[in-house]
Image (cartoon, rainbow, N blue to C red; front, side, top):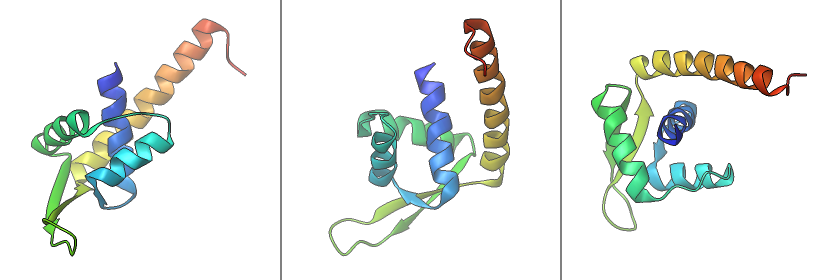
Length: 101
């Protein structure tokens, strides 16, 4: 379950703008989702192999080139499906637990 939620969050972060992996980790930490590089990179690879993400290399003034990720059109469509699924799941859990407003 956590892996699926992390993929959803990562796609949502990348959908906002092109981003470097360490910045993804920072944004997840800001949201209280603690993720390390060893967890992030396999997810990014899976999402890229599924055609949901793409990346480009950019030279860095402070070390090796950096890989910047962006969402593909298929990724945007998939993310919209995830938004809908999340809303439905959230409603179902809230209803089942009596936490609806």
